[in-house]
Image (cartoon, rainbow, N blue to C red; front, side):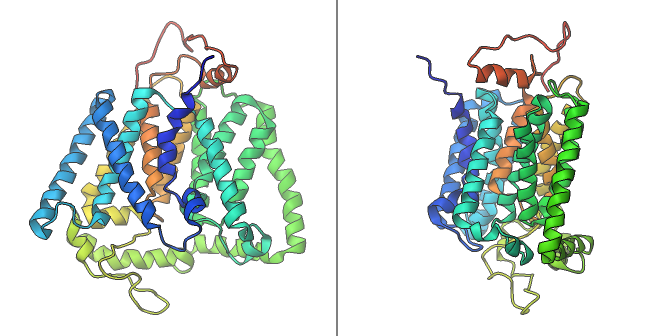
Length: 437
């Protein structure tokens, strides 16, 4: 009897996803704007574990990524020396150090999947669907009602709601490859959850990711944009949506009012809604960013008094010396590490995505998904700092880009694997082959 252990490849990715509230609430229960201390310790353990991947499997790295690793290690080492010189401790203010250690999770994820091969995104998506829906039903079922929607009671934080986007993209890609109505329904149900959870930043990210994913799929093997598939993709939501919207308007006009408010908040982000709140935070810290634009405030930034005050009571939004909690990835990195801090995270991934787009040859559907998700993340970052799992997904994307061109359609390969067969390795294009990205 042969035991198929390929599912073990998803474990490092799931270990990082477990840092999201949708996962850890099953252990700690719902928390209000507070991460349990156990999750913080767990995250430190992940830093150590993924650093071990770097030392064990570092030879699998591409030269560009290896150079990036050395730069990251040099920056961490320099910050440790600065910490010891000024604070008398090698790791003063873990809040600041963790922003660099997150890159070790990114690079460790990349290294692991370069060494052992890519995991099955289908398995990852299955776990996500199970966890997300179970969490909503167990802990936040009160938010799954039209009255909760009208009152803007959101069951998930934005980082958890954003996990429905890779589920939606996966179902869309597999539907276009296989034509399964079940996958099409999975795509639209994911969109319904994204809409219902009312995180406007996730809405915008979805509007960006879906068309980019469709454009990238034009280069994917096994995907055919047939008339019937496109017709169903358009007709199903139009038909069901018309009936559903009609019923909602007749029975719950307050829901439409809530939708109109959401749209107005997005259209007037500088005057109302959470967009106005973020703008005030941005304006509060920009003078400090301009003061040290290149390398930021680093550890001294932790000691800077709180600059942002609650508009409702004119009190500091958070206590001093607890870190500055930015709802903007770019502002966070610019404040602590300057322009160099932003480039330290984004320069290499942007280069690799650009190189892959310019490279000739077919594209895996899962690689297209991850690239579309990353591009949407660049927009989502204007509203939120990155969660831990974003770094792992970015590392997975880099590993997917680095894989050699597919020798056969990834869809055909998955079908063969599902049938417990060893797929024949026949090139998509003969006799020409394509070099790794």
